[in-house]
Length: 300
Image (cartoon, rainbow, N blue to C red; front, side, top):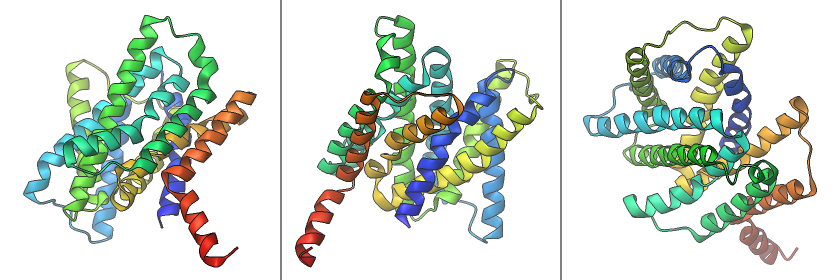
């Protein structure tokens, strides 16, 4: 089950960048994000009703839901939309790849979780791999102060993502399923974005082009309902540290799609980066030790 959830998350989130790119244009980002999570929340509430699961969370969970809605389904996406407007998406992906490390550190600081050496080592290997993959994009922006501002905003978004992970883990330890918590947190995030957009004077009119509407549908259904539910179920089953390793892998899927749709050219350094990411996966999930132990037991 963990493998299915993991692969689903990587494949879905590795392709949502295309849909997000198709949304940029006439509709302000906060409005697009509000529509996305508003639709996703309604779909999740409908699923809860169909599955006859309880909808109303206990009173003790509301403070966590409000914090998750603000961090994970509002500020997180605002930061990344802003960052991608001023720096290449490859640089943003490098910053976002620090999520496993942030989850380990924040889990230790705020929840008393023990640090997992394999998760940290795997995350570091993966981060080096991602840097190798995007080093050509990074080289031209080291002296650009605007780019550094964008990277700082991306890091803030990653911190919000990490906070949302820990909040989900806390609520799952209370016995709450991500279906229920996501529905309310997404609704809260959409409400905050809606109010902010209204105060800013943004129009809520949608771009009716097939590309925009198709992107909105993909982000709401696959990127939000399926992707976030699968990912946060992994957080509950594996812990925030190992679940967050998805964030290191999905840029690889994005690069594969870029190879097909945008003519991305692989260099020798990029191949080395890909191998480091794969090695990081093996280390993060302690698969090398398990394989060694299994061979020692079976004698093969």
